[in-house]
Length: 162
Image 1 (tube, rainbow, N blue to C red):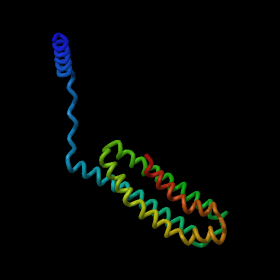
Image 2 (cartoon, one colour; image 1 turned 180 degrees about the horizontal axis):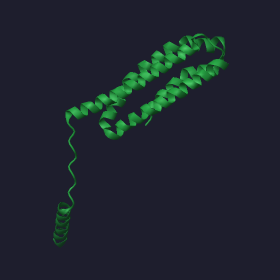
Image 3 (cartoon, one colour; image 1 turned 45 degrees about the vertical axis):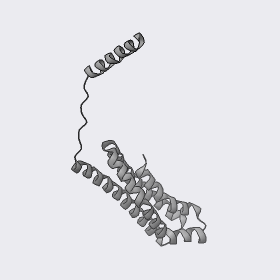
Image 4 (cartoon, one colour; image 1 turned 135 degrees about the horizontal axis):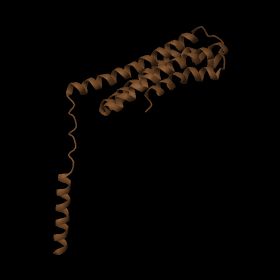
């Protein structure tokens, strides 16, 4: 009986202590318009990332179209990917800023990327197939094949890394 009374008094004291403590600010309510704007911003960033990826693939295909020698093509591809690397890094900074600003909008943007990325990577494969076949089957230039096949995807990965 005494033990129950002591426990009751201690619990009541803890409740009173917690009730008298510093009040935390109520979290700011996010309006539906603000939430929609954040979601639209996330989709816009993803669309920009995918558009930059597609543009990089198109430029890589244009460089390889005339089938230059590997010694000529490799430095051109390296320069192209370096230029897009800087652009993708800037897009990644915006992508991560969205995460810091609104985690739910970021998660929806991530989902949007997950839905749309495979289509763009598949289109890359279709766009670069003639160059990949030429440099792989006719020339045996594995470095060119690797750079054409994997370079744009690495850039895409860099743009969405967390």
